[in-house]
Each structure stands twice: as C-alpha cells, then as structure tokens.
Length: 111
View 1: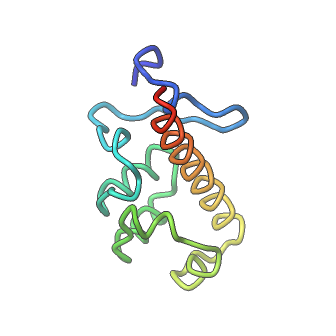
View 2: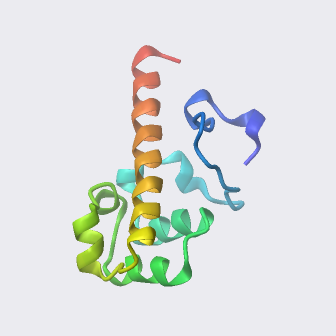
C-alpha cells in the first residue's frame, strides 16, 4: 500500500509495528468487524502470523467480529498453547482495535 495514499486513520500508530500489506488487500479498508474468515487469515498472515495460527483461526471460523472479541482465555481454549504466541496475537489485536477506534473518531470529527 502506498503510504502517501493513506489517510490519517490508516497511518501507523507511534510505537506500533507495521507490516507490508499485500497487493489487493482491500479488506484493510473495511472495518475489521466486517471481515470474513479468509480476510482474518490474510490480516494475520500479512503481519507475520505463523501458518499454524492462521490455520487454527480458519478451523475455528474466526471472522472479524469474533477476532475483535478474542481473549487470552478463548485463545487458550482454541489450542494456542505457548503463552508468548497468545500475547503476541493479543498485542496485534490491541493495535487493530486502536486503529479501528482512531478511524471511527476521525470520521466523527470529519478528518
């Protein structure tokens, strides 16, 4: 994605890691709560998510709406055993939630 073509809501947040979004990843323009199971997998893969974790989310039919509600406990029940892997995914989810909130707030104030 061309950084110059991004609006302020899509700009990286200070201190947050970024990843290159593959061409054609239009799902980045959608609200995460509207993502399909496939789009959730593409989002995680674009951020360097382990293939087995991407597959696990697919097996559990994790859509965007479900993704935004995942907790440490739900990840543990899904079989994400290493605590470090759960923490990394939860960190990515926090970044995603913050971006969504920022995007919504900016749309409210008209920027």
